[in-house]
Image (cartoon, rainbow over all chains, first blue to last red; front, top):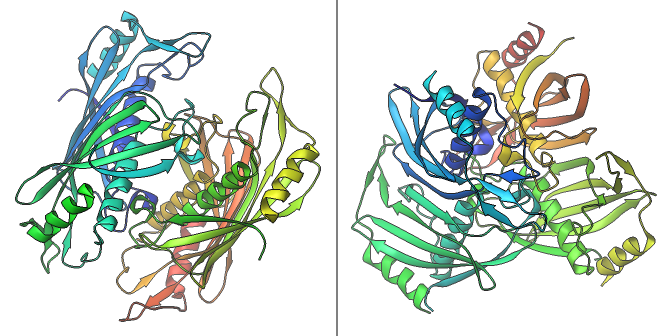
Length: 137
Length: 137
Length: 137
Length: 137
C-alpha cells in the first residue's frame, strides 16, 4: 500500500448532536493529512505565502461509516492527478478495517501580483518530485 | 429564479491565515441553508431524531471566488435529485453578481433500530412535497 | 435595558455529542456580537489591519443553561471597562427569559511596526465615542 | 514540574485572517488536553453518558503570545481545585520557552434523571484518585 499515513483521534468539539463527527470536519482531516505530507517532504506549504499560495478549487467526500468521539483513525493520502498548475489529493479514511470514507481536494498553485490579484502558475518540478518521494517512502 | 434564499455574513472565526473563508466552511454554509429550507417548510429535520435521521452520504464544492471577513453573501438552494431514500441538495453561493461557488450535499433518510443500527428507508411523500412547496414559494 | 442586541440561531455544526452547543462556541458568539456593534457604529474593526489590530488578551464565560440546535437566542453587549489601550466587552446571552450565560472579552489596541512587532497604543477617543453611541441608541 | 503534558500542532483551519490561532480555539485545546488526562488515567469521560455527564460551568483564558500555523506547542494540565461535584482544570500553554497563555475550565459532575433533567452529584472518590495519579506519573 502506497501513500502517506496520518494518524488522528476524534476530539469532542468535532462531534455534533447526532453523536458523530460533523461531515464538514472530514474536509479538515483531509487538509491536515495533506499538510503533514508537505512537512514529511521537508517543505512548508505556507512558507512562500507573500508571493504564492495554494487555494482549493474543488473538494468532495463520500461518507461510508461514522466516526465518533475518541475514535482513532487513519488518513492515507496519495496524489490523484497533477496538471501544470494543480494537484488533486486523494484520501482514504479508515478506522481499523472499516472504511470511513474517501475524498479528494484539488489545489491550484497561484502567484500573487502586487495589486493582490492572483494567477495560476506552473508548479515547480522540484515540488512535485519532493511530494512524490515523501509519498513513496 | 427558483430556490430558497439564505442570507449570511462571514464571521471572523470562519476565516483563515490566507485571509479568506476556510474551504471547509462552505459545507457548513450549505447545511445552514438546507436547514433553513426545512424550517421554511414548517418542519424540523431533527424533530424525529429518536427514530430517524438524515446522515450525509456525499458532498462536493467547486470554489470560484473567495469570501472574506464581513462579506455578505447568499446561498440559493434547490433540490437537485430525489431517490426513494435520498435527497441531493444543490447550492449556489453568490456575493452580489459574483459566483463564489457551487456544491451539493446528499442526505439519506434512515430509520434507527433499537440496537442502534440504521437502515435507509423510504422518504414520506409529504416531506418531499412540503420541501418542494417551500422552494417554489 | 442598555446595550446592543445581536440575534442568532444555533446551527447544527455548533452542537456536540452531548446534544448541546459546544462550550467553545460561546466565545465565537460573543465576538460576533462585538463585531456587530462595530458595524452598528459605522466602523470596521478590520479596516486598518495593515497598521493596527485588536488582539484578545482575556476571555471568560460562565455557563448557566445549555443551548440546543435551532434555539434562537440573544446576545446583549455592553462596554464593561475601558483603559488607555483596552476595551473589556461584557455580554449576556439569553433564550427567552432564560439566561444562558455571561462573559467578557478584553481586546487591546495595538500598532504594528514594520518588523511585524506589535505594541499597545492609545485608543482614539473617536472610536470609543462612536462605540458608546451605538450601544446607547 | 507536575501535571500532564499534551503535545499539539496548529492546523490551518484553526487560524484566522489576523494570521494567528483564533482565540476560541484555546478553549478547545484545553478540553483536548483534559480528555487526554482522562484517557491517561484509564478512563473515558463519555463512557457513562446515559446516566452522567460533565458539563462545563466556567472557562477563562489569558492570552500572552500568539500561536501561528504549524507551531508545535504543549499544554500542561493540572487539577486546580476540587469540590464535592466540580473539578477546576488549570492549563498552561507553551511554545518552547514562550508562555502562550493560561486558562481554566470548571466542569460539574451531573446525574441525568429519566425526564432529562440534570442535577449536580458527588464525584466518586475513585475518579479523583485516578485522575490525580495520572497527573503525578
